[in-house]
Amino acid sequence: MSKSESFTIQELSQQSGLPEPTLRYYEKIGLIQPVPRDPSSGHRRYPADTVSVVNALACLRASGLSIEDMRTYLQLLEKGTQGATQQKELFHAHAKELEYQIERLQIRKQYLEGKVAYWDALERGDTEAAQRITEENHRIAAKLT
Image (cartoon, rainbow, N blue to C red; front, side, top):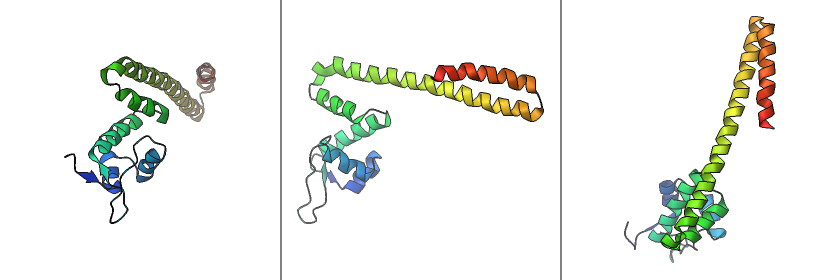
């Protein structure tokens, strides 16, 4: 992409995977710089430097970063390598949060699988197995609180 090339909101939406309303919102809250308008139509024309930022934001959003973390990332990006330590901390903290969420999801999955096993046991008429599964599911549920 050349420095003089620009994109419409539809083109950038398609390229980045971000919906048009999200692009407008990111501009409104200052996550991306105000986008120049085509003088003849008044439509947004995203310049190459903004396209690069939008593509980075799309990746960060897909990774689950919050708006504030994206804002922090962009501010640190301006510092270059001097912001490297803080960038690493930002991503490490997010990775740890994802790890925690994955653990919680695994427990939820275990619980639901237990519910399937419980109903399977009842369907087979195996009340002893259903009772054991119920007790195990209580232990699993306790991890969720």
